[in-house]
Length: 98
Image (cartoon, rainbow, N blue to C red):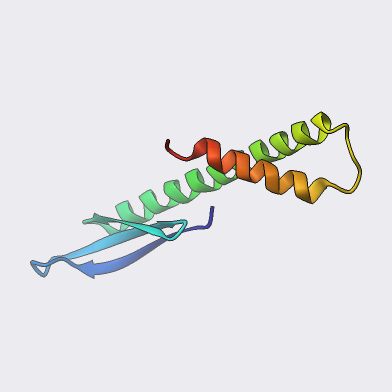
């Protein structure tokens, strides 16, 4: 899950200066605006930490699924990459909205 979180100053349509937090996840952008730079930076910091934690949890879950697949096939040697991609596919399928 590639992501980025950036803070940048912007002008609203009424000419009011705001600070935007641009969160991009898998190519999809969400823009949130804050009146204060400190609030924008604080939100961005928390959001980055949350996304990093989500990424760690997803990676751990894929490892668990790959291990289970490996065990179910009788622990064959040299098949780690195939099990990893199969697990990643299963994980992505299970987490996507139905």
